[in-house]
Amino acid sequence: MNDVALLDAVAAEAEWMEELLARLVEAPTTLGNEEPGQRIMEDALAGCGLKVRSVPLDADALRSAEGASPFSWDVEGKRNVVAEWPAGGSGGRSLILNGHIDVVPPAAEGLWTHPPFTAVREGDWLYGRGAGDMKAGLAAMAGVVRALARAGYAPAAPVQLQSVVEEECTGHGALQCLLHGSRADACVITEPHPDHLTVAQVGVLWFHVDIAGVPAHAARASRLGFNAVEAACAVLAALRRLERQLNEDPPPPFDALEHPINLNPGVISGGDWPSTVAATCTLSCRIGLYPGQSPEEMRALVERTVAEAALEDPRLAENPPKVRYDGFACEGSVVDGGEPVVQALSAAYERVYGERPRLEATTATTDARHFVRAGIPAVCFGPRAENIHGIDERVSLRSVVESAQVLGLFIKDWCGLVRGPGKEE
Image (cartoon, rainbow, N blue to C red):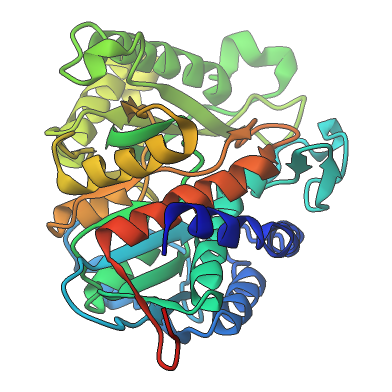
């Protein structure tokens, strides 16, 4: 199959990919609600002629697995959707295409131009929560397989497509696939990284600081009360100092970034009445860590920082804040730019865009780390998105097709393509 024919075959699936993406966006697949989206992916992949199976999450297996994160929620009934595109020949290299179905909550829905779980097209842009992060990537990887299969081709080496859950909080969907035996010579994750290949990423730690105050009537707050919400401000200030220290001398390749380690106080909750001094407060945060640094090391830094903040206030010292963990606790990862998968995907990118992609590090985390830990080089590349995790998230529909075209050329080069049964050259 020559490049022109391949690109045309993928472009012919543009409408199908857009329709799939719209259906996915309108399934509000936040944590615990992923199944409607997985049913859509299951039907779409089966419609591409692939053999589809479920990989359910196993809480006990996950909690005992290397690379797992702590979690307090129920995973009963959750599943990944995995589709096999079997080899039609021999001599190629195997591949995993991975994407996540889960999305973060829409934040302040009233700030959106359109309802966040309504797919709205305006010109080249399709709006909606998860449109970019990363349901467009799922549509692209399904679309390219559909295009090649409908053209009568099969890969010379097996390709597995994964639609996984919980990428946004633990990565346990991808980890469960690996625990079930998923292996390949390389993995491409179709995250919205459009003009570059992401070859390095930070690790992430979620932590929660529980602070106790002394409740009292607001009229007597200065004499009798100790406000836990105000005390949280002192703890946050100490954590900001830790953040500054972590950014003072970043290692390569993160030394190319101005501020690679980010602390985010994402949720604060406390108090129960405007006229009562807040008795409790919980500060829930996310912080990054460099590859080579373990989550245990970062936990020690966080706990030391919180303890030092408590010593600065006698009232906090009397009842020190407690740090607990629920959600992300993962290491960073790096894939060498000379890896064959990086070179092959870069060459495919160049044939679509006319230039080689940049190789970049990201200050976020992705499921790539799980594959790298398992000895499978994994990189991220996908459609162009804006405002992910923000207001009016959107994705370029043209970039969905172009990403699928890059993936098609990459599959041709990496796996090899052979004519399917009954097809003639």
